[in-house]
Image 1 (tube, rainbow, N blue to C red):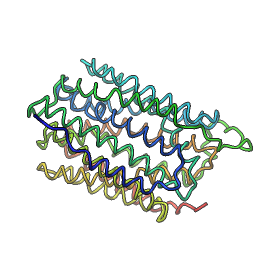
Image 2 (cartoon, rainbow, N blue to C red):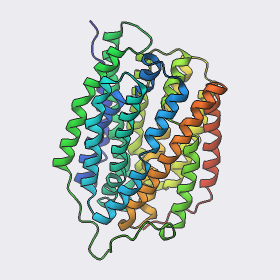
Image 3 (cartoon, rainbow, N blue to C red):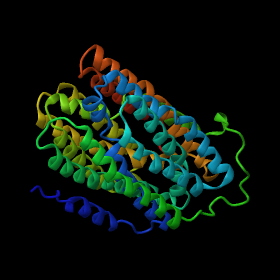
Image 4 (cartoon, rainbow, N blue to C red):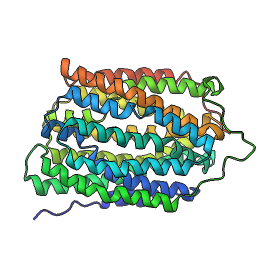
Length: 415
């Protein structure tokens, strides 16, 4: 009888991260736990949707790209609006709770999916939830964290997020090894079992958030409520950074294409699960150290390093010909996430005043969300019209260009 996979490595990564938690607020720690549980749920269900669509429903890559693009981009206006209203109402927690709740209560509907239309609807609602919660959550973290520790705080959140992904994917891989008996592609029964596995952690995350996070009193009364969104009122460096991130994101299509690329190289469904789990373990282990490093060396340097790593990795995916190529590239891909994600979020907080952070995070996440739609659609069409390698050449070229442009932005000023 098959045994459950060992998850000690994921637990060791979380324990290692605890050694660097000095100076982090209670809200940051609780939100980290919420991220762990929510990402457990998401990785088991949403991450595997491309395989479900391709293997079970027989959907072509162009439609998969369309679904991924619509799911991300249609929530963009909510990201911007929720950030603005988080500033105006000063209710970061309430919006964050609604966002996590919507995602937690809609993902179970994937159990009943028999057409790609229902999958699209669930993905849309899940991303609406993400759109509602992302900017207020990031503002919550920034509000309670002093500037010298922001990289650490956002790195911790990303580390916990990916630790949940590791645990979820390893358990999912074990379930597939038991249910599929060596079958290379995903089956409907297996995917439905994964959806059932993901329900409870997602709902528990909502309860912990409701009980454990406190609304901070950071925005003092001397700060007036923000005026309607004004592009001119934002720091010039923030606007330049936002534009470069949009350019980069145009070549950063959904990670669904990485999974499909792995399958075309010859990896089975269970092997892909284990590989993505290893990827998330690298992210979990590297996010907190990278965030701390950004506090000392500067956010921009870490972001540029991440984009250079990304470009090399995407070039590798373009020319990969064997399974070990994909395995090595996926692990290196985790270093990109570790270097970029926490540093980018911390840089946004550095470039805007506290009373506009919700709005800034809404614009930041919203702009990238808008770009995901054309990015995923372009990737799907390039794959379908030319070859699986072309989308990765395209992404690598834009990453290199973005890294060069970011060098032109002045270093962030220490407060």
